[in-house]
Image (cartoon, rainbow, N blue to C red):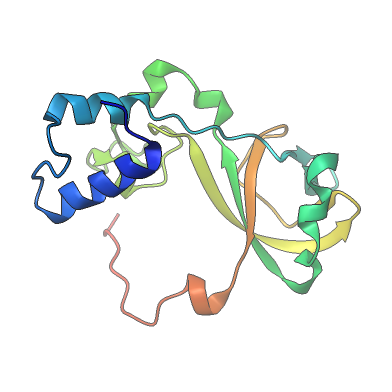
Length: 172
């Protein structure tokens, strides 16, 4: 059976909505998992984090410089980057950690903490933008290493990125 990624996504949604029932007529659970396992996303760096003694900035590759148009209208940015120093099968397979490396905190799933060890090594930092200079975005700080690959940048928009509801957090 040939299935497109688009159809697979819709079938996955249908299966979830149906409480796990297989909505793809004639497909076994193993066939659905095989298709899922073959789904590949290509993510390309758009720049690199640069750190000097005097400054921290995001250096955007020349071919993506046009994507920076309008950034000057924002004070803060979300920067998504790749935890490239953890890109090994062993580190990607770690699913529970002691948050912040503190052994006194119980093991916690990586989806419930900010560990750099995760199945997909996508990191997210909220950064204050200090200036724009050609293909450089000067920021206050970022929890990333020099030369860390940047995979995306999005403006921080309070109406979209905050909640008026009570927030629950763990006690650690």
